[in-house]
Image (spheres, rainbow, N blue to C red):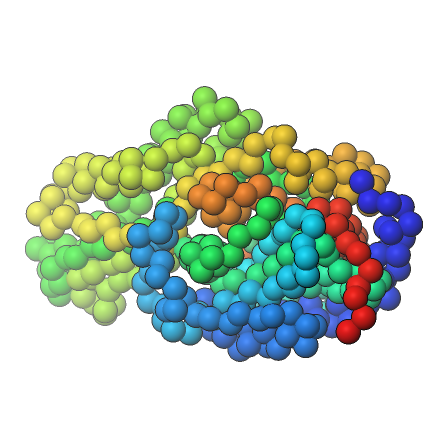
Length: 430
Ligand code: ZN
């Protein structure tokens, strides 16, 4: 538990820097860091962190051999030579404390039609204490927390007595390969904290996610004779319906899962992108549907993949056209295990004590029906991996926003967590 006098010093430091933190968050949100377009933001981040005295490792995913690593996901339509990752290290001289990785992702999902937003998605606006903008909540707010939490310690003249790593990664929304790359590159610590927007709750468990593309090919004819041709778009719908039925069965299975039986229908299936056809008066020759489906912690990815393939195969077998033109299933992203951060780690006890002190109540926990990056650290590299961050709304939706009051308190909680987990000492004069 943090010493109350230290907590007060940290609180004052967070408060004193908060206008700068809000400006930093607005700068982050202004970057249109869609998948494949994160490099300018990451370069900016590398400069920000190196100006703060961190040793900065800037590399791209093309520099790291991911293939064959546990948790690596297939990649399509993205140039990894431009997928910049940033790891900033503050290494303790004569370390006596525990080391810590704090990680945040800066990739954001597309905003959709800007006309559906009340404010332009990449022009952050503050209203009633909330900052609006795509990515402001998921998870640039958390990224600002990690940077300014460490700043608060420095502003108090303190330095961690264990190694501290701040990681700014990409690909969280599509593969997780950014997080994985940091581990393959060799970064390790005694714990990992990811300040995703959790409304100051600890994510006890999250589902896994598989991405796949359905590819259907048909024979185009003039629509006037459509009875002699086939329609790839209509055929693709049959596959979507079959996958919806499959999802229903998966959710039946979830009813006996030790964690996720607590939620109704935790397995979500989403046909997220559809394209197909070439002409309004030709039956479409092709259709592609990009899909996402969840799986449960403990599920075997290969088995879940086989179940998807079997569902598609069976649906195709019952369709006159598809039976002769078998649709393809292409794995095009997430191949993510679910993960449970079991109770009882020392890291959770430390974070829980800090939360209690900052928020005046026990730290709640939650179950995630979406995926996050903690699985890499926790499941494959055996670190306690805590997903805990500020409050917000509208991730992946219109009018995404983060609660700035919560951002401030969460920054303090993370600063106190660093102090308690790593230990601190008066900074050696430079
Ligand atoms: Zn996120």
